[in-house]
Amino acid sequence: MTFAATILTLYPEMFPGPLRTSLAGRALEEQKWSCDTIQIRDFATDKHRTVDDTPAGGGAGMVLKADVLGAAVDHAIARQPKTPILAMTPRGKPITQERIREIASGPGVILLCGRFEGFDERLFEARPEIEQVSLADVVLSGGEPAALAILDACIRLLPGVMGAASSGTEESFEDGLLEYPQYTRPAEWEGRTIPEVLRSGDHAKIAAWRKARAEDDTRLRRPDLWDRHGGDPVQPASGVQREKKETDQ
Image (cartoon, rainbow, N blue to C red; front, side):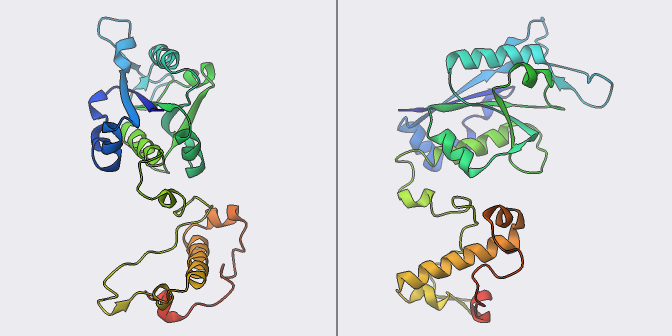
C-alpha cells in the first residue's frame, strides 16, 4: 500500500523538495509513498484569487480566509477520506513520535500549511477533524518546512524504507527517552576514547550502559520527558555513579 501525502499550500513548488533525495527520494521512486499538492489559491472565488484579509480587530499582517481554506480542506478530504489532516501552526500541540508512528501506519496524511498571521479560527471550529500541530516552540515563515519535517518522520518508518528495522525503534522518543550516545571508529580521537564498555563485547553490559545513559541524558537535558517517563528528578537515573572518564567522552 502506498502512503499518500497531500499538502495544501500556497507554494506547491516546495514539494517534495528535499524529500526527493536520500531515503525518502528512493522510497518515492519505489512508490512506497506519493506526494500530491493542492494549491489553496485555486479555491478563492474572486478575480484576484484572494486567500487572505486583514485581522478582525486590527493588528499587523494578514489572516488566511476561512471560506477559502474550508473549500480546499473539503476537496482534500473528499479525495482522501478517513485520512488524518494536520494543520501546521505554532498554536498547535507539539507533535510526538508516537503520533508520527500512528500516522505512518495508516493510508497517508493531509497537511495544511499556514502563512502570514495564520488561520481564521472558524476553520477549526467548523472542521474539528483538523489536528493543529507544531514542531516546537518556534515560529517559521510558513507551514511548509514543518510539513516537510513531519513527512520525513513518517516516510522513514514505512516498511522497507530503512535498511534495519531496529533503526526505527532504538532511537530518541520511542520509549519516552532520548537515545543513548553513539560512537564509531577511530577508537581514539583528539585524546578521547570510546567508552571501554562499548568495546568489551559484553552485550548485557552494553545494553545496561546504554539504558543508563539514555535515562541520565533525558533527566538532565529534557526534564519534561523524564517527568512523563516517571523518573526521579533528583537522583541519577542509572542509580549508580558513572566513572568520570566515561562522562568525559
